[in-house]
Length: 309
Image 1 (cartoon, helix red, strand yellow):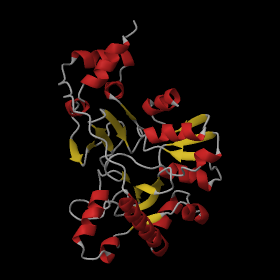
Image 2 (cartoon, rainbow, N blue to C red):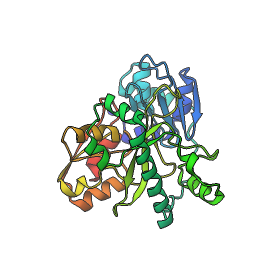
Image 3 (tube, rainbow, N blue to C red):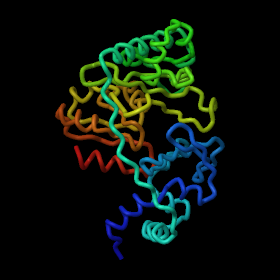
Image 4 (cartoon, helix red, strand yellow):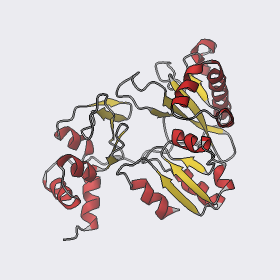
């Protein structure tokens, strides 16, 4: 028996993922906009199961499993797709409360871009002076100095606050950008960083990867500036190549770059293909996008790329 597409979509939209996960006995705690708990699909010691209530999607940063409410029930209850849909349709879980569509953040002003470029330059200097970030990347097989220099590798080692003047306006601007959190602490502290660029070559965002996975259990390992995802890493690859390898993260693209494979651009994680990606690929005349994500079960954005590009 074929399940009606409308019924499947109603389940995906209507069943509250957070309530579903909690109903299976998994304790979760909020961290920023997301929720984290121990992943039930591998021997998880530190909470690596991430739940995004706004998108009603989940992802494990440990084992790589990911998907929607149906996929969660498939894996947790060990049932097939049809049975998972049936259980979700019949279990009476509280439906999601529709949320108003958020107003998109305005693009960065020229002043904000200039300040962001200064932060990128500062982190780049810190990367050269503090060996810890370089040593972390070497453990990942990312050691080509020319690649790291070309992509302005940085390190948020906590020294930014030491050089900031006692200027309330500047501190407020850095908080507005997301470089500092509301407590005045560095958002990317302990991360190796890479700038993400807009179509004009200006820094529009920053990607950060924690170099110590055990530093803050339950916290995301991959960080971006708060708000909408702006900017792309290795953006120029789309101008030079008709085929692009779309990876899951900046770290994955760096691995390819260090191996001499230059036609790579990363997404913002498994569910992180943005309108900027699609518009840029089209503008540059990219003909084929090869999706090279980790071996997991999340195919949401893989389909999106293929259907919309």
